[in-house]
Image 1 (cartoon, rainbow, N blue to C red):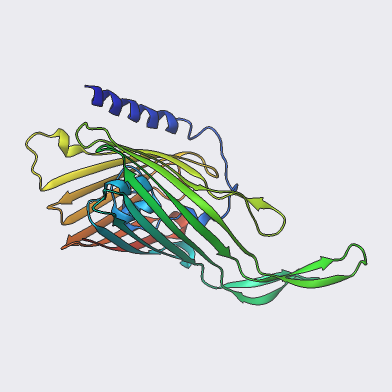
Image 2: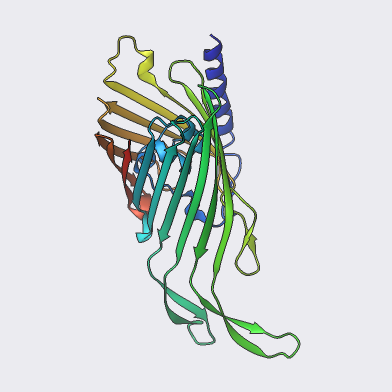
Length: 335
């Protein structure tokens, strides 16, 4: 009875948090938005609702505390995300259980972004008001290392420290010397980087397979390119998950239906809720669907996967309104 009450309280907390989602708009308050884009195909197929789901080394991108309950000795993932506007996101993660988890799990992550080629321009005193300066190739990257430890059979904590950087391409700036009044053209590199921190907790309530997770991602100081500083897309997320077939008597172990719900409070966007479902058959075939709430161009998400001898292949498809769609692929291997 106690565990059922705890589960009910956690669900109420999620609902109350979401009730504030339409209170006010807050956009364009942060930079390094590539940190908010998911690359993992399983996550994208479930609308990103993975803060209360055990997902191997990929948990380092969503809730590092889930690594504390990783079942395998080692897990690695590689993801490729064909995002909007021909932007490509790539991610890689690996995790290792130290002494079979006795001393926790250590993980690392790498993610990069290829924005493609962009025609550079510069303000100029001609009729057009600008001149073309040639192609630029903006890029972004993050590299992190994390650790998680289960403090009991039900509760774990974890964290990650990341270096994140972005290169927007060089540009020419007209600089005036206030003392002499002379001017000169100076080339700026437009490169910025910072350290970011992620924290999380993961709690198995003990009632059926009901799990509660919380995470704080992209905590950092301010970043500056030239004159104006900005902060990273700090996001606080609370989530719950459960195999709802646990509620059905005499249900075969060959089937499961995982339902996961995340409520997020980001710094630069209105609050939103994500709902993901994953149907599993014989621990080998997976079908996923999700719903991303309070978004302008996205809503439903879809995905599938197949697992054989520790190797898993995942695919996701996300309709993206006027931007057409986004697709991602992930290879995962654990042993």
